[in-house]
Length: 281
Image (cartoon, rainbow, N blue to C red; front, side, top):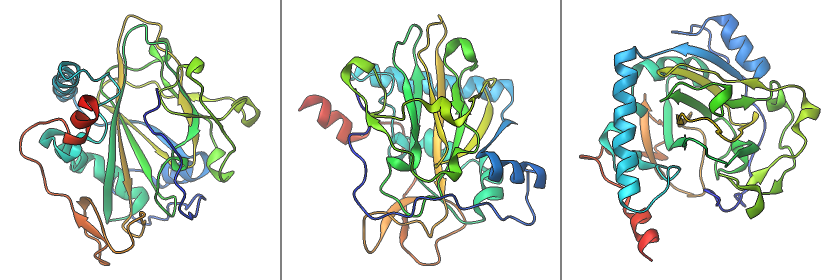
């Protein structure tokens, strides 16, 4: 059921750190102010129709690889370590120009996930804050959510609760098997924080949100797939559980401290070995 099994036990600084970029490349100052106030910004017109089609065909290829190996549509998770095409999306300059406007010139990535809701998918990504799942501190992660398919209310668009990133960690409960959850955390009664905003995007468009923002998505009752690629970026002063050094994609710039060691670009396209081992164990 759950993609992520537990919350990190390390001591973490979970609060929002506002963007302070003085000379943005792509976002306007008004958009950066909006991101700080509301926790997100969209829509960002990023890829042409032809490029969006290529992104979709690429995911179709990965999804077939997963299916042939007995994995489900949510299992294309952190394949950037073994798939060159996904690595190239993580390091795409057009995406990074927008991310840099929030995080600054040095950018690291350690997490990617295609959230693919197939037609008539009954599962929900229940209301949650991303930072609650990750063994990273401080909470400076920005999610770039790239629409692989057209996304709207009908096929289960992601919904965001504006301003909730200023509330610190919001209490949650564990998802039960009866709840049909993709992840395993659920903030109940989120309506007390206001009305959510639906992230409706054409394929090839981008949304950005902070890791402290409450959000989620509901089932896809339509006859259309709803897939979005999440790429998680953060500045190099963020630390993991490893005390000395850790590995990640240095997507832009560098890490002056040397803590984040560069993840090499993989050759070809392959399922990460640990997933195959888990499936066959």
